[in-house]
Image (cartoon, rainbow, N blue to C red; front, side, top):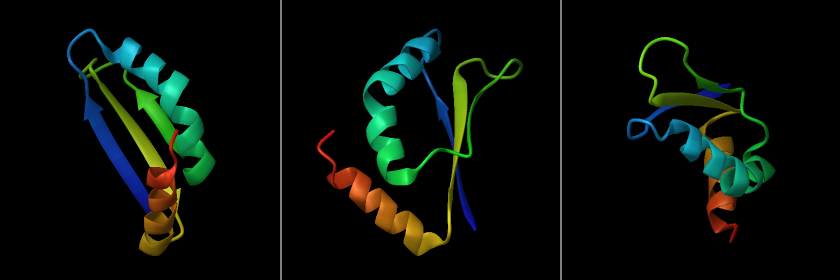
Amino acid sequence: MLLDVRTYTCRPGTLKAHLAVYEKYGKAPQTRHLGQPLAYMTTETGNPNQYIHIWQYENAGDRETKRAAMQADPD
């Protein structure tokens, strides 16, 4: 199993707006190709402008195939 863990930092005060845009435009095409994320997290403590998401794949080839399909999606 391969876990793809990513931490993103938004401009101060824009995290909620950023996540709302993702929910509206990005989540459907992304989950259509990658499946549901293992985790999509914000923090109660620490940097309030960061979020983390974790996607799981069978291996690096599985990740490459799924991400290529996602990038080819016009949505």
